[in-house]
Image (cartoon, rainbow, N blue to C red):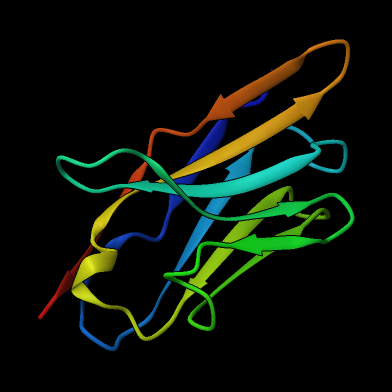
Length: 118
């Protein structure tokens, strides 16, 4: 079982920056994939970025070059550094953890609101 708690959301102007954090209730060393997803009003939840235990990263085209995902195994925390924010980045951002064993188990955080004003 893994509990995930996001923080760092808020209101920022276009071009600004925010750093989201996702704190896990246990060691993230063995969590196969950690990711950030977002959901804007009236839209489906979409992948923003993810990172594997080996440090391989994957980004949505819309955020490449602006967002950076990272994980600190010592602090059991994942981060999303968001720069050059745009109004279209406005959404609730969710932390996600995928644990692969006999079965695949997916955990979600409660989400944090990011609002980018124009």
